[in-house]
Every structure is written in C-alpha cells, then in structure tokens.
Amino acid sequence: HDVVRGGDGGAVLKAEPLTVTKISERGKKQKKNWTMVWSELTSDQLIFYKQQQPAATDQRCALDVLSLSGAAIEWTAEKSSRKNVFQITTNTGSEFLIQADSSSTAASWYDTIRRTIKAPMKD
Ligand code: I3S
Image 1 (cartoon, rainbow, N blue to C red):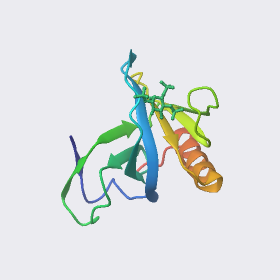
Image 2: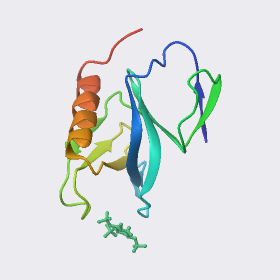
Image 3: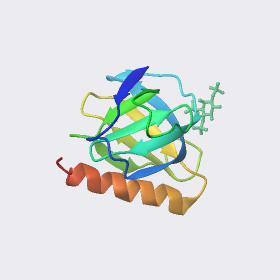
C-alpha cells in the first residue's frame, strides 16, 4: 500500500466513494476486480482508500495513488457493461475504470479530474 503524506500539498478538492477497477498496470493487463473505494482528488493526484479516513491522520495507507500529471481521461462505453464509466490512463501506462451509479456524480468527477489534468494547480 502506498503511504500518502499528510499536511500541505495534499489539499482535497473532492472526496466520495466510487467504484473502481484497475485493468492495466504499466501496460500489463489486469483481471477486473470492481471495488467500492473512498476516492480523494488533490491538485495532482487521485487517491483510493479502502474507506474514509480522518484527514488529520499524518500517514494514510492508500490502495492506489494515481499521478494525474500527463494522464488521459475519457468516457468509455465499450470496456464495461456498467453505466457511467470513464477511464484514466496514467503516464506510466496504468489504466483504471471508474464508475458511479449516479450519472451526475460520474460527470462531476470526470469534469473535475479533466480540469486538473489540463491545468494542474501549483502549490
Ligand atoms: O470485461 P469483462 O471480463 O467482461 O469484465 C467482467 C468480469 O470482470 C467479471 O468477473 P468474472 O470474469 O470473474 O466473471 C465481473 O464480475 C464483471 O463485473 C465484469 O464486467 P463489467 O461489465 O461489470 O465491467
């Protein structure tokens, strides 16, 4: 599990449960395993936790930390039978499918992540 630094640099822009599966790790195909995770978006990272954790905790153990620098995001209707699915491809070639039952929740995450990728906020 990845250790996430607390304090500054990690201001959370958005936090909510989402359903997620990694389908590729550094270009290598992974078996789909949809999981409900607590998701937090910062100015340059998307972080998945097993469950919601107090923000004050100094070092938090994440399931995955995606760097959004150089990442790509797109809606996909082909890679899952689920609705409201979008894909994030990181600059290291890992691919994640992200899904929410609510189309407005999915669209809100998609739009916010896309803006973050286009115009990363500097500290
Ligand atoms: O892309 P796939 O292989 O159709 O994805 C489905 C499988 O991962 C399936 O698991 P099993 O291969 O163990 O049956 C999951 O239960 C499904 O949810 C996956 O499809 P969806 O359409 O939900 O992404």
